[in-house]
Image (cartoon, rainbow over all chains, first blue to last red; front, side, top):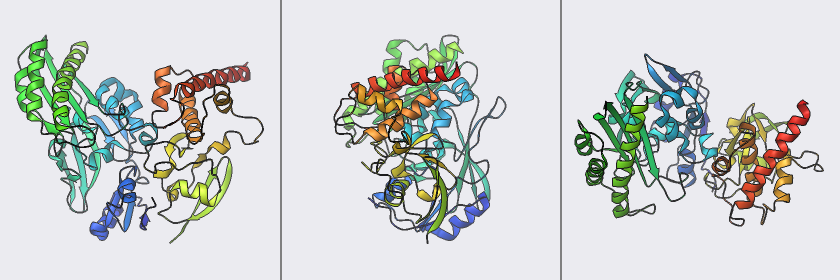
Length: 291
Length: 164
């Protein structure tokens, strides 16, 4: 399994990278960690003539936190560094856990959180949590900069809202309110190593013992990560008791649209969505009450 | 077109001309003849090709050689540079019987080194997480986990001896 031949460029600035991407057209590909891109190339799924590395662009690997602006994760910030960053563990434990649950040690030392999103796999482990927490995607292209809610970023398997020569430069995750908690649970055949068969993330905002708000997202059960608004509605304004959690789980299972593939059958996925949903809401509300 | 890169491998400086499509694995094995670096799945799933780049365990099969300009690489050959005295991790693998066919061993030991340098006293769960990206088809992992725990103890003792 050798790589097909390509030209390799290492721009020092975003402007230079955008110019290269524009000149290369559909034959050019951006590379951050390369763990998804090089695999697709080895399989012959894509044969780019130009590979543009983002790794030497100053400041793109930033991980920064402030209470005002929230958490910023740069395009080349490694999964391993997001998983172990003290501010992320303290203020965004679910984001750190999702990063730590992605692939294995070696891949986390190479791959990036932003790359995981841009690869736009419906099973991307970092997507559900970041979606639940209301993440904004920062994009730069030849025409300038724009911001997009992550909820509008995924368009289908391998497809994103990026147009032409656009680059995701960073993500911003707002600081959750003091009475909110988030959690992510996933299931796959080899523990957490292989591609996730089902993943569910929740952010719960509690008012005393009542669920004031819930954002619920499901991975690997549709062409993109899915939101489950019906399950959210069941929980709103209610105390997260076991029978209610079970109802929300069943509702979420109905809102998922899984397929049969080598990782799990659609039937299995539907049942697991129900179980993971009730567990993840319970965990997120527990965290919300603890903060 | 080939690009000339300068890198350090097991403490020795190298200058190599590489094609952009050559992986670090290909260059280490074919240009530098470091065949302790194995190639298993070629997709970052099996860990047989694990090396340390600037102290981090990575899959050499999914790393481009051109990206290694100025980097410090450590392969299993660098664990026991004299070829006489083994590294504590290697000693522990032998003592605990953690090697059967041996194909996973080099990558397994590099993943273990990455783990123990970050976490000198790992729990069993942490050891298992640390080698979760390394497949072994022979041992069933139990002896490998024991060996890494034993290596941790050896390495702690030797660093205590050094500091006292």
